[in-house]
Length: 151
Image (cartoon, rainbow, N blue to C red; front, side):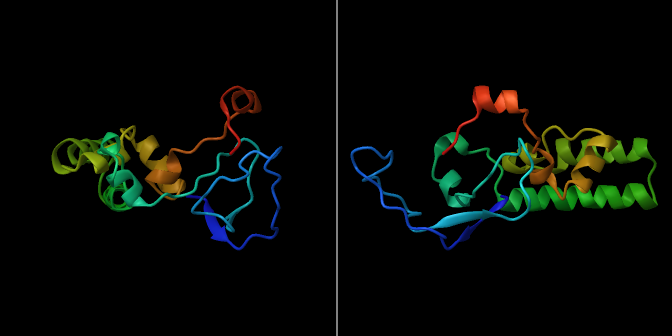
């Protein structure tokens, strides 16, 4: 999540004949969101619905929640620390595979660890401030024009 709730700086009045969303309702009426950092061109914006939103929907049973990202970050930080002080890269990679395939039982935590299989991946996670942040990437303007959606 790279957005936080703020008090709106404006209070627009919508014309129900010409303005999209006029007459619609929202839990966020009268709210505004502000970025926690400078937004780079092509960066996506994320607002948290909270873990309960995912828990309440059966199609998201394996979606990583906050505690799963925290657990995966703890596992990866431990392996990173061991690799820096006691293990060579090969043994640290073996430990990563052991943790992912034999120790982690929660499918949500497994999904948070998905795609992390090498020391390079682990270094990327550590330098990106954790598993959730490491999956973010900048999109090209062409991609955004074709697939992006302003809401």
